[in-house]
Image (cartoon, rainbow over all chains, first blue to last red; front, side):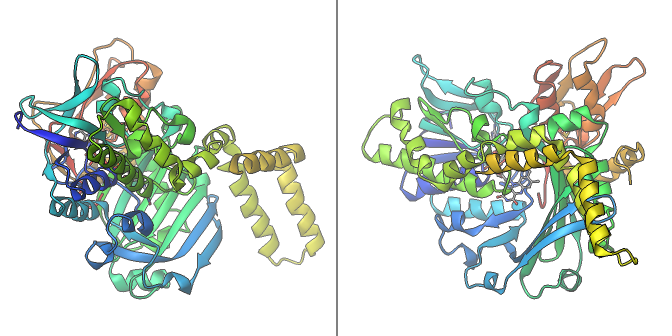
Length: 434
Length: 101
Ligand SMILES: Cc1cc2nc3c(=O)[nH]c(=O)nc-3n(C[C@H](O)[C@H](O)[C@H](O)COP(=O)(O)OP(=O)(O)OC[C@H]3O[C@@H](n4cnc5c(N)ncnc54)[C@H](O)[C@@H]3O)c2cc1C
Ligand code: SF4
């Protein structure tokens, strides 16, 4: 192995690494992909919603054989307090289109499938191999990687780091800092199995239709975070995630939080009688635009979670991962074809290309949100309680006239937060959203 | 249910029992540096680790049993500043093996 030289090495076989490797191999480059798991996907965790368009750019006919669970026809957004939820549902028959827009997937299975496409395209994929460090030449240019296989090194013109949120290789090589605990969320998740028919009747769906629920409120015990519940073919994925520093400062255990979420009166009936077959935990980089590290340098590029490419507001990550992986690879392919060296100056084209995509535009648009949420905890605690109280006052028919109810609701809000506070929050949110 | 109750602690072992692991016997991938008194950050891991890997011993020091570790990186991020933990991935192929993820 140490004798061989590659045009490119990709570290990691998640969506970003697979997209990069696939693009490189398809263009005829000699590429090696290294993955520490027993098989691609064995270390990976996602909710998981797959956004079709990012994958379609790479594999237009993926729907023919990719392991897709259900296409999503209904989205629920729930604001929860301890005993109730206020929800917004959007359901449309238009989502039952020929080429659906979003699917639920099971990551271990999806990653395995994606990897089979990568191999078909001609890449060499080596699993059970952890990359330990980058190898550099005397001038500091990255020229290969060292692995834990008897310390073997492999050489290449360029290394694409698709190593995910923990990004050990890049950090230990001084390319970026460790993610601060207040910009990263810890999510825990369980897979609950239920018969198809039960899922379909419980969620009011048929065939391959699916429903997803995103939830916020007192379910996170005052911490910044959200919960989710997604329908798969014969299982339901249920999870909850909060900012790591919030977990560290609270007394809450992640599994206790998940138990409480599952036992919430609005969630419990949806899981009734299910069998849990796996418990998983993973970090999500949520710092957004301001947390983005350097994206390229002499002989290297970074893609996916390792580069902080997650849109936390819309819970999009895998599509940003695939898009950045594809664009990084296209940058490399273009330089390779022109026989230009993989220097920092030349690889800067990656950033230029990225700036033209939804990835940078969206991250830039929401650059104020992570900070806003961190400084405004009332969004997760007070407002859900207020909304819920308002709904209850409004819907309960108890002989009280409507004008009095309206006044009571107004006073509940005033009591919870000053008028100035309410208006201030709205303005701040609008600014961050803009 | 109150997420702060210690009762939930019992449940984590049951949860981990569902998972598949290939344990690299005798080669723990995470170690806690010897210490007299743990920092607040290190102590917080007793509740913040999603696999319940950390525990406080009778001397008030924090210990780890990494067998159920899901390699999330939370303990690494939390103690990055204090440097009380040596964190690595398990050797290639070892550690948690998700069937679903
Ligand atoms: C609970 C949860 C829910 C989510 N829900 C959604 C969702 O619904 N939709 C969505 O789009 N996104 C979602 N995301 C985000 C999404 O999962 C990530 O953005 C995406 O997986 C990032 O892909 P990646 O390829 O960059 O990293 P990863 O998927 O983390 O892949 C990194 C790969 O690199 C390997 N690796 C790491 N270090 C080394 C090394 N040194 N040597 C060899 N191999 C190495 C790892 O084993 C892994 O296979 C969610 C995330 C979580 C945790
Ligand atoms: S990596 Fe995660 S699961 Fe493993 S010990 Fe650290 S906090 Fe616990």
